Length: 83
Image 1 (cartoon, rainbow, N blue to C red):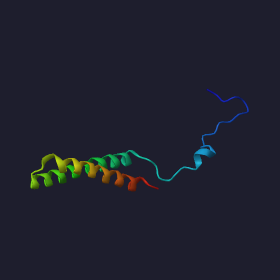
Image 2: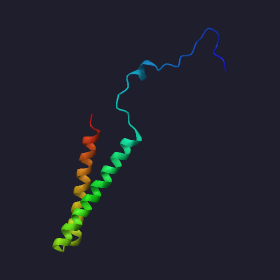
Image 3: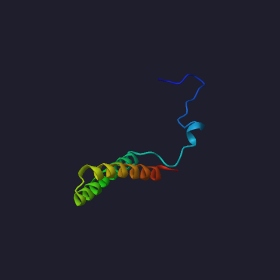
């Protein structure tokens, strides 16, 4: 396919694409966010299960640990992704 006579096509980016942020979102950043969330929940679950094992109150601290781990993981994701 040829360009019409007298017209030339450019392959350079337009001006709206020239101002891009230097930090590009890569799959590695999505993986790190997923890892932070999973690790936060797992650590909270493990900590809660350990406290429940010590005191003999099975579901109480597991639930608290999971929610606390998730909240801390969300805060870690916020710190990781803020600009």
